[in-house]
Image (cartoon, rainbow, N blue to C red; front, top):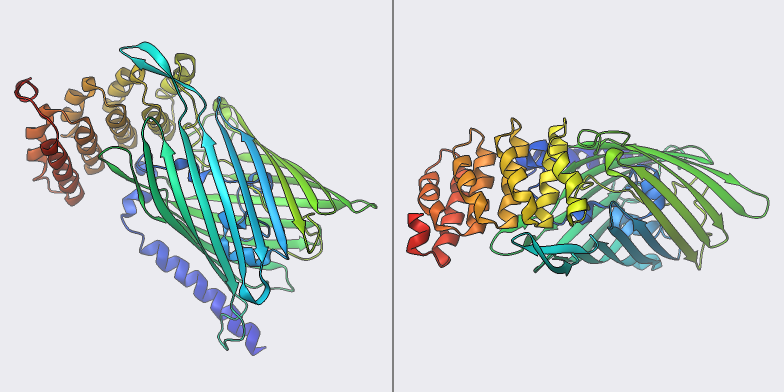
Length: 487
């Protein structure tokens, strides 16, 4: 009885640690809807695996195969022997997302995993003065390696808890490449309530920044608290609450029901709901659906995730387990297996010729401010100068999130037409918008912005002063001509 009480106290302690981490998040303004468009490496939020996607991405306490490396490195310890996961996901427009991972349990020495994430926007037309000069293919890549270990025999309340960490190498390529490193950390509780209930806590994408030219951008760090409960043997339910940098908090719910056949095969139905896209995407979104077919050591899973007017995303995954239990998600008292869904970088994957830019430009007029901000962010990543005029127009938008995202996008596109409108935006009433406008002007490197930025460096807001000083420094390092200063 003492052990059970100690574990429950430890579990309560894990919740307190999670709460403390949430309360101490740096730059709290980065964790709400006004910060949309202020992070790089959005592909890191695209969840791998069809099972997890179909369950609404409520998966941090569910994972027990190779994709645990992504969801919760502590859950690598739940791999019975060896596991591999392969996934291909046709995404929005011509983009696609691939994932592969391998995990192995080392017994008393813990468990290890390795994986690769690859996201491609598909071919994009490159233009100069509106004239096509060829195509390029932006892509993102992450290589991961992780380790998990179960605490045992230490005489502590934490006995039975699993802890894990993963290191990542991240590369993002548009016309130029940016690289960085990051780390993930996770905790997984023992199973409580007759092996029916688990809790999980993860802290992901900690560390590096991506630097495309002069500017450095933060990764989409996220805190996640999750739980999974087996209602009865074939029926599992799960829930996660996520606090991402660059967006507002959101909730994820998921469930699956496993039907076993006489010949050792299983049929699984899954459904989920994720609130991340509901404020920003019009039409039917948030829900997810999927199915799985398992036989012996293999399980083939499919997920369907609608994104309203933006289209639909599909996931197809193959999971293999060998040297231990079957690949079929356990219908016998364990808290099951994984595969995920697309995070709210939904608009980002739209591609770039005129026919593909048009939906994003139209989305700048959407009724939902979050949708307008996300469209501006996607246009900035695509870098097509055809978006400059529409983005300048929304600098007058009533939503500060939209104004900030548009300013950030104009800085990435690097078109001199944006200089004067961005200088005017330095007078915005919102400090976040002023800071983003200053950063954008620093990227543009136009001498006309030097004096206004020097004045902004005396702003009452510390973040605004810092961004203005960084921009002034960049302008001081660029080749500014007398003509630039006099224009």
